[in-house]
Length: 334
Ligand code: SD4
Image 1: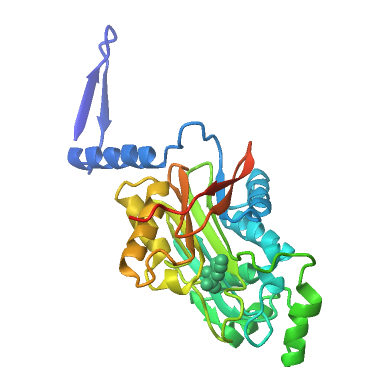
Image 2: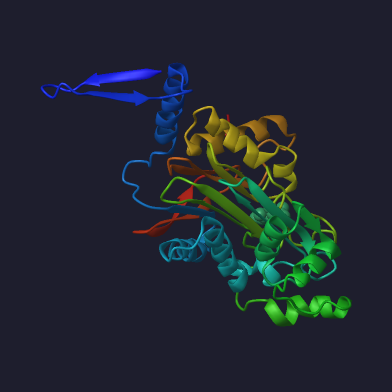
């Protein structure tokens, strides 16, 4: 296509040659650009990254993630460093090696990580003696051709990549790993566990991670929702992300986090999407609302929300200017 422009007074002709471009393609491409920009435009007042995570202990993780982004680290670094902070603190005695032990008296940990822009993901399930399962999950994502490793294989792979670990030679050592080494002092052992952390960076890119010691007293070998993509965590670069906490069995049978994201895709605000997911599960499940499940979500614009089935649910939100804990009441049963 030739486009000619006659310049006033100069009587010169500029010819712009746009070979092999066809007008309809240009228009289509331009509208994608405009739509894309609108979808990723920040929510009013948001000027920079936003991090949301489960439970009040998520605040330390959020702060680390914000700090990492401010220092120029990548989105995935920010997820990993944030969650490592919770694992390091074994916050509330329920994430990391200080988390709740299984029925045999030792911790088995679950974690996953998802990166929106690359659509990569990695997860570990039922891994023992690994201090930072989120880092093990990241290694699976970046250094293997797989997505999910469990048990012995996950531990072996993590060790091969030099992650911090402790001895689990026999049952005694496994129990000692929890009892002596990592159990934090003075924690409320009835508290909840699991950090699901979601980030939208200043450019509107999304990533997230999840880490837990899982339900206390679980059978050895039990893997919960937390490392399962679509259940404990789901990230969709086009739409947003969601994460879950609570009784994993009541989340993983419904692909809870995926459902939240799909509701956002239909145009729902993250708050509404979390609530609708709880209502949907409660409608289908014989337990009704007695599910003990909670969701957090954020969308491409940096709007966020949370909902819980049958309890008050405090969660943490941080931007570069503010870090706080907010609560939602349980949803009102329909
Ligand atoms: C699990 N969803 O393993 C985790 C536990 C949890 O608050 O989040 N509890 O089922």
